Length: 420
Image (cartoon, rainbow, N blue to C red; front, side, top):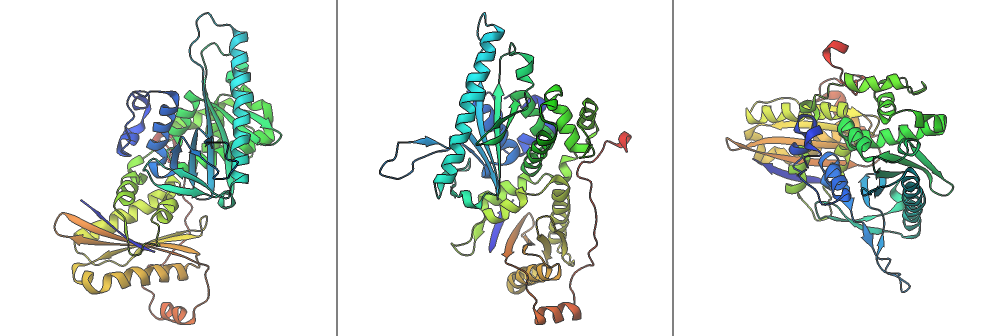
């Protein structure tokens, strides 16, 4: 797969670290509804390519009951899916604790749980369900391709909701399993801390493991303690209030790993060489990277771009992620090589890095100056099982074009200097 890219609400702005949402190209101004708030937040931090709202569909059967709603919102990245149900309590004059308790039990626990069960039933009964992301691109969601489903209920209660319910972290359903319960304010805090879809989905998996081990003991802790446990604590340790302090130690260093601009341009301007290729295959890999992995990607991307702009020859830059069984190779191309060697270089270096590191997948990228101010980037994805190739083995032994690779353990969350 090869593609080409050419490039030349107050509610959120108050808590947006470093203008992250604004750089993602998503407006976060005044909203119309709670659903709009969550939609804007998800688009800003999880990319419009992978977020879906108003996921309504029809079965197409003769007995079709009409339009059905899969969920209030979806986050779908590769084999991972987060299904959202959203519940808001409008302010009620002269309300009582009993009335607020009744609302929570009726709307959140009973109705919300039923809707989650319906979502799972639809996914199991329908071979495919059509969904449209916030870029207006339509896809067929196949339950057979989903390996992890996280069920999430985000609720925005009134201030009078009893404390024991406001702090409730989960609901266990006999058919739907663990359903995360997260207040809207806590959800915002989670997103503005984790910032990437990969880390958010990983946190939900971690949160579910905590629920399985510690159960209702978690209700005595604020969400910050659970999030801090994920960020910096021994994962086997019992969560405690002091873990919330881990959140104050994070140095986000967003400029070093934020690729929202790259994804935005790539998603809009990708031109594939054949109609059968799908640029979302590459975008999905990028969306599965954590910030430490994104940092490795972006540093090589920027360095390659600088070399291409200076028309300076450089050996390809590369790295590999065993976690995803995927490699990345970045190839600066000098002006004299553009007309006749660029495409071959892209294919050959991608194939060579994939083979050398024994990977299933590899993404290759070439960078070439296009005039004094513009540049052109070509992408290639190879995805197939690794197999021994005697000819390629001999070629790499005789003349390996790459720098030597070494195993490096990266820290996912950088610490503020005074904490190091």
